[in-house]
Length: 342
Figure 1: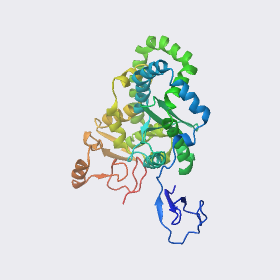
Figure 2 (figure 1 turned 90 degrees about the vertical axis):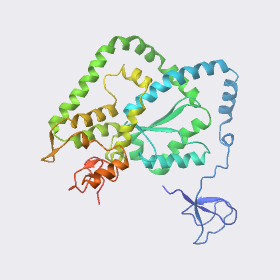
Figure 3 (figure 1 turned 60 degrees about the vertical axis):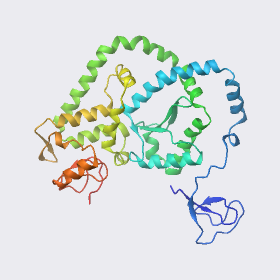
Figure 4 (figure 1 turned 180 degrees about the horizontal axis):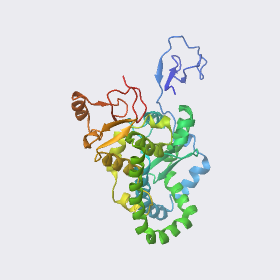
């Protein structure tokens, strides 16, 4: 996706870089016409909002107690629980984590004259995205299948659509609608899940044990971590953009709601499974990787900062330039993200 457009020297309007004349005044562009990033938001939300949408929102504002009650429940209970689920089982997008998506989000936010909202990417084979929370506390969730199948312009439409819900303050009402349609199933869960909590706790421990068995069977820590990471993002293309160090840092954002949310789950958070497997691998004497035995200990866990990386590189260690994974000095390709090494 090219973010540059031609700025007409005559009227100042913007046109796509492949146009030979201005779409506004028909001025024919010279070959050396200036290319700039058009982040100008010269329109208001009322210019494109449906009149019926504006009318209904105006009417709902006259029943403040209902909206405020729903806002408090979502803000202090359902929103942090849902976000805690994503912190554990999705990837939080940033300038250094899946940067392609973050760059598109920045572009869309500039066009709509708003802040870049919190964005998560979760493995799901269905084409979908949604915005969840309240009008002031919210996030956008993208399914991984969109990122694989859609080009940058198409993704800009999807992300811009979700940002449109935020800008037009649709988020609270959409979230209320979600709970009204899913209410019966939610109430049933409230009744039955506490009865299953002890079994759920055992099940999570069993999953950690099974992960260790998988590692011992595969004798390949890199392959085992890639398998878990693919459960998060769903594809090789996204795996190559994944920053493992930042993913491990993401686990530190867990809080009270994270503990409440996981109490009723049969599986641990995927980020916890990755972290636990790295720590467990550090306690073993050796693993078989590509038919070669390599020594592993706690020092093989990814370094916490650039200074530590520089210190270890000085001592002869090598780290992937893309994801900072600790790699063998003789390899030309990172075994975790697949990036070529110079």
